[in-house]
Length: 231
Image (cartoon, rainbow, N blue to C red):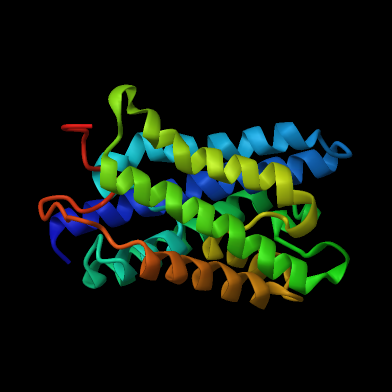
């Protein structure tokens, strides 16, 4: 593996581990304390996404999510040859994080696994697809337009995740991320309706990728880590 790609993969592993660790760790800790307000949970997930983006966006693009990598590759914003090593790194990071949560906080709340409320799979599919589309759109705007003065566009994807957590968290657990759902589900044995997240989220990402192609591609750095130049 080329050294530059290796650095990117390490960044994806660590960044995804931070995202999953902070987010699902908050769920487990909140469960042990009889819950926290939904706005606080949404804030925790905003930070879970924002922190690794700020740390790693200029190294790997900070995808942190197999669905985001899929959308970026499917739309032509990154090369397909980068997708598989990114996916391996992201799933590995998620499993590392869930293992740390299990060993430090215990296995409460199914380790933060995503579970449809009342078993409503139709609503879960639609809600997860809709907010995944919003997340991918936020990433594409960042990828195409750069970070913005003051790096404000870096906070669009975290804002999408925070909003999703607030709106659909009580209904679906707000996944938007196959790695974030798979790792705690496997380690907690919560497989029941996992498939709905593993289908809805990538499907929505591919739809947005098919509809929103980049007008131009910066060959030197096609990921969302591209620095602001003209906008």
